[in-house]
Length: 174
Image (cartoon, rainbow, N blue to C red; front, side, top):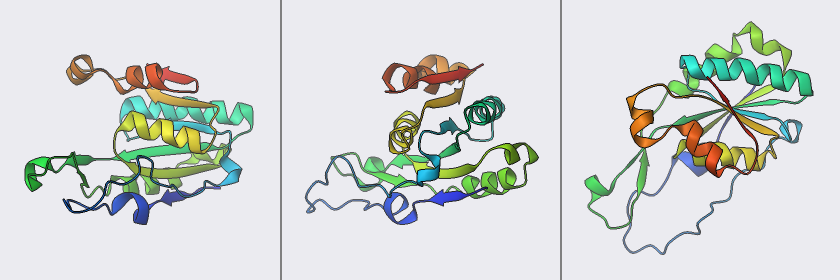
């Protein structure tokens, strides 16, 4: 069983800047998740080598535990405060067709035939979105690849930030 879940109406279409609008609640309601994937394994995937290793490990983990695999791709979002000149930080989604490409590649992959899986697209901070998906699906664990590079050393890696703040086990694959 393979799938793709995209929350176009709730996540992708955000109001850019309206100074007269009242602030929204901190938590926007999310769509209910597929119960077949509750207590599954969440894995962050962007097509990089480290995320491919994390996906391989997560497939084995889900297969051994008899659970589903929730593959999460977090699309890019940029602050619009520079463009709109507004005070509060407002985010705009950058068109990111990478999720569609990843979904097609994953749908054709033989190695995913061992477990039921779903691809979830989100926009925002990677750590927050992975933890949020983990919470929504009551995931048993979150699997991510490690970051090797200067950006991770300067700003902190996604794996390190996620391990510090997550409310469930985080497995970091080197």
